[in-house]
Length: 303
Length: 155
Ligand SMILES: [Zn+2]
Image (cartoon, rainbow over all chains, first blue to last red; front, side, top):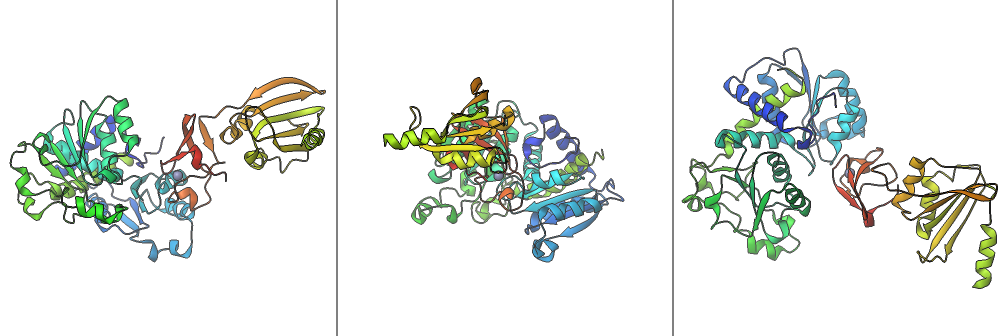
C-alpha cells in the first residue's frame, strides 16, 4: 500500500503505533504546528458525529489546514442519490486528504480504493473506528508508561462494541497483556476474538461482574450496555445495574489504575466517579486531538 | 423410473470434443451455468439434472462442446459445487480429469451476508479472503464480516 490510508486498526504495524504515540506526545507539547499550511482536508460526514468531527477539525485547524466537506449527508449531493464512488472520485480531485464517516460497513475501505489521496476512516458503521483506538492507546501509554504487562478490564457491551474489539487487537501486538472481559451473558466477547487471543497465547478471563476483581486492573475500559441489544427486556432489567462503575468500587484499586470510556457516557459511570483522580475519560477525549494530529501527519508524511 | 433414466442418459450423451462437468449438486446447476458464463456461449451445451449418484442424492451434469476451462475459472464453481469433477474430452476419449479447488480469494460470485455492507448498497464487486475451505468461510475485504457456507448467496 503506497498510499497511507488508515481504514482498519490492523493496517498499522506495531512500529506505526509507536510512531503515532511519539508524534502525539510531540503534538501535545506543541499542538500548533502549521504542517498542513496550504493543504485542504475533506471532512465527509455521511452521518453526524459531532464529537469525532470536532476533534478532527480541531486537529486540522491547529495544524493550519483548511477544511471542506459536510457534517451530514442530508445537506450534500449524497441526498440526491450520488453514489459513494462518485462523491469520493470528485472530492479526491480537490483535497489532499479525506477524513470520512459513513453508516455502512466497508465504505471506508472502498473509498480508499476509489480515492487518489489518503483516506482516514472516522467510523464505518459498526466495523472500524481506528482513530478512537489510537487515542485510547495514547491514553493508556500516557497513564501507564508502557503497553507491556497490562491487565486490561473491558466492561459492558463486548459483543457489539467496536472500540473494545479494535483495542484488543492493537494491544495484542504488545508483550504479555492480560484481558478480563466483564459482560452479561448476551453481550460477551465474540468467539472470533477469543480464538485470536488463544492462537496468540494471550491470557483472558470472562466474568459476569467485577466488583470483587477490580483491584487487579491497570485499565478499566467501560462501555454502555444498551437496552436495545437484549432480545428479552427482562434480561436487561436483571443486569442493568451490574455494569455500572461507582466511586465506592475504586477503594482498593491500584494507584496506577485509570478508567477509560469512549464517550458519550449515559449512566454506566456514576457521576461520583468523575472527581476521582482515576477517572480519565475527559482527558482521554482531549488526547484525541493530539492523536489525530499525529495520524494526519503520518498519512501525509508531514513529519 | 428405469425408462426415464435411460432417456436422460441419451439426452446427455457423449461429446466429441469439450468438457464434461459432473457431480454438481442439482440445486447449483444454474448457478454453475451462470458463473461459467455458459448462458452466453454459442457452443453446444447439454445438461441433465436430478440424476442419481452414489455420492450426492441429486446431481447434475453439464457437457460443453468445444470448450475448455482455465483452472482459475473452473475453481470459481468450487464454492457451490465443491465435489465437481471435470473430464476433458478429445475425440470421444477422456484425456484428462480435474477436480475443483476452493481458491484463497473469491472475487465476485458471492454476496456479502452483512446487510449493512457497502457492497450491498452500491454496485461493487465483492471480494473475500477464504479463511476456511471446509466448511467454506469467507471474510469480506470491505466490512470484514464473515459469510459462512450456509449463508452464501450467489450474485
Ligand atoms: Zn461485506
